[in-house]
Image 1 (cartoon, rainbow, N blue to C red):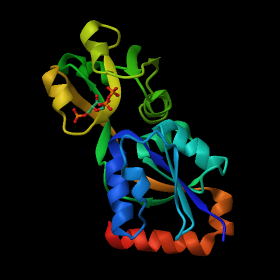
Image 2 (image 1 turned 30 degrees about the vertical axis):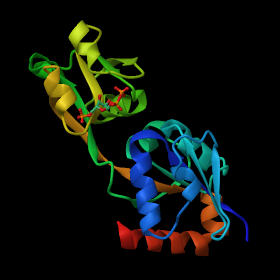
Image 3 (image 1 turned 180 degrees about the vertical axis):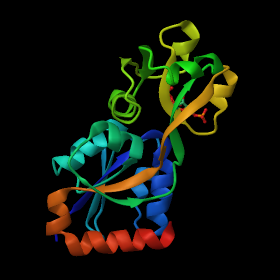
Length: 211
Ligand code: PRP
């Protein structure tokens, strides 16, 4: 039996991912050691391998087959647009992709004006403004602290993740429109899904029972 490899997302989703896997009896003790610099972990008994990667890299590992399975946010799946199967909504990491800004920017969203939109998710923002709203906008790619953009005058609005809403509140910004709901998903390499169908289907079934 060959190893099935999981690419897991570092950061916010990591703890919830590990506890979900644990509940389903898929454990990897080594991975819990936060001081370890080891990159890849093995469960010999179940013939599983795990590694943690940056979110946007997870769909890349899965598309190329370097990982059979990935656990990653829907935001990243939409943004990266990789060829893979999205097989299950895991429920955790629930949040929303939204257009946000100061209340004063609201009329700009219905007047078809050329506005600037700052975001870490240029593909999601383009799809929303060009294909759904049919509004031509200038997209400005940022890498974090997106809420700064409308405050310092870089853009009129942002497209960003809203979870509790406290970052917006503390910075005088509001949700102006909702783009889509988000949560963690399980994704599978298209060839692995065929070649390892039995094992992967069993894994999906086991995880479905605990989520
Ligand atoms: C995310 C997102 C918002 C914030 C939303 O940023 O980009 O800034 O969390 O959460 P809230 O609604 O609960 O306040 P993250 O902390 O991942 O860091 P980043 O700004 O570097 O992207």
